[in-house]
Image (cartoon, each protein chain N blue to C red):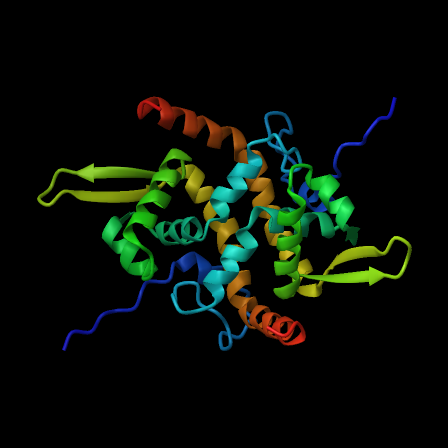
Length: 144
Length: 144
């Protein structure tokens, strides 16, 4: 009988895990059947990232979010916010005013994601020139 | 004449920026015309995240990457790797053996992304139960 070893787990993931954290009841990125992979897709979404960052400063109305994101289709933003509400990252509150005011607020779970996401956002801003230079070099070498 | 204020920048992004870093020649996530948003889409891709983590332990062949990712279509993995090569995150090296060996290695840029991504990966693993509980509660409340 041949035993096939399970997929490797990169060292870095476990090295960076807070020591006090229990390992039971925890997802596994390298288990293809684990919902953790789906979570990666959700929190990797560009609008999710930007909305979490904006709401980390406090609640915002739909119109404010839209104005700050500048180039987002209202339908796309609505869908992103609904997914974030379902995933437990934001709450949506309706205030009985005329016209009704709808406000989005980060949940505790959403707040806990803000700092890791801000680190990624900083990385993207800092390395933007290296990224675009690499793309130009690749395109030149591959005749695009 | 009406002056329209530019979009807000969340405090957290600037607070977490390393102090020594020059602010010139740097992207801006909240400028809709800046390529930084495109970078977010790239590094937010699920396969990019998992490949960066796997290669943070050392170079791997295509077949090893595929075996570790388990449920990825070869064509999708090939496309992800090609994008990562174009973006300057990995290099692809062909060794003249029989059969030829193709190896992927993280670049310095790719390595600099590994730790921020591992923090996000840990967040996803640790919060998987909260995520799925939130989804179940939302679906129950909304009659799905």
